[in-house]
Length: 113
Image (cartoon, rainbow, N blue to C red):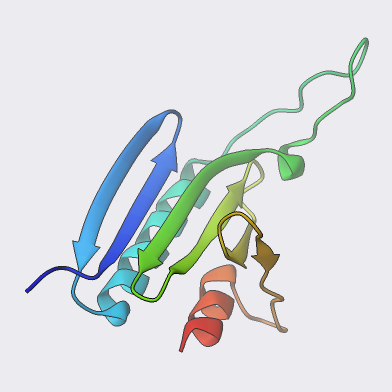
């Protein structure tokens, strides 16, 4: 049986890929990847004098992507300050709105089920 879901963790030019038969396992790996990237996030502000200042919250330090059947494309961007935001789509990304006390992974899980 072919593995239907793929999770890619992208950070600092490196890509780690895992394949899963079910969405539940893939979402578990996605959550682990986001937690790992958030723990490692420690970006510093760049620019300021001659160029626009880019704060850590504006920098994406890692991305966890989920692909699957039926053109499923979704993921979570992890920012330089450790915060994260979920999205669906690939070319036309749509931000997934987080509810109160809901993490980006929980919001993505809610939308995909």
